[in-house]
Image (cartoon, rainbow, N blue to C red; front, side, top):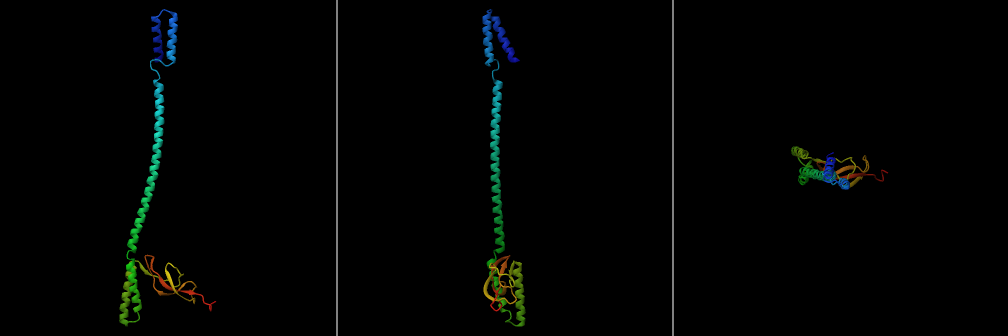
Length: 210
């Protein structure tokens, strides 16, 4: 409405200044042309503002999309870093625990040799001395148990190369072939880990048994 008023005011002013009808027609034509081409009081400000607004919206949408992609990438990287950190932490904890449990492994190997000597000495002493020796053995076994050191009891069990070392074969009289029939040298485990294999004899079938 404001543009129409401007156009009418401009036209009436030109009519007052001219008495020539042809001039009036020419002015009207000129004014109409100016109006048609947008040469008025405001021009294309509204159209330009709308165009700029749409352009800004598109730019913001593109920027938001790019930021979302960056957030996704950073989130994935963060998850991977946290997973790697957890793995390192678990491995470190396992290493520390193993160090605590098995740090005395060499010492335990030396102790079981002392137990071997005590076992060999049994039966060669007087009754009083033998009782004293039995007390020492019991006390030593208590120390073993306290620190997770256990003597294997493989007789009757299936042969296991991770626990047993075959030193002989014996006829399977009352034993299933392939099982441990006799223990020649005690084996030991520290917290379930074999620190010394048991030297054993394995039961086998003989020709007479066939």
